[in-house]
Image (cartoon, rainbow, N blue to C red; front, top):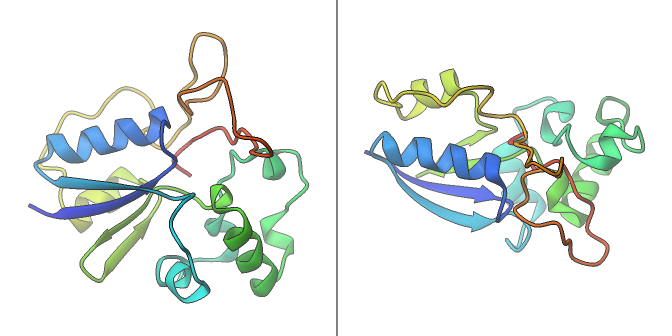
Length: 156
């Protein structure tokens, strides 16, 4: 089984579902905060570099949902700068096993990559945001740090 470094938004229920699925498949999950990781352009591009710019972003982020940021209309340099300035804009989770990396949690891609060993999948879209009874996203808290957008938490 694999040891997966899993970059997440701490407290995100969607990321919790994904980590639980990986653990149930026998993998060891080492969770790290996407927000507090000291990202550099080179390190971030090791995950994102082969993807189209639009796939770099969390589509559930408020700035994207509101149309303030339109990933399809921004340059490589601008996109990279935005993600380095605000890592919560990054599609998540970012996962790493050795030198291999994956962005997002597409079940088929994860299964082909490290195997999910026929684990029963939870209902619904494993990449989607999980909403609590009050309609808040799955960040695990109704309180947000000063200046932090509530970003829908989804695995995107």
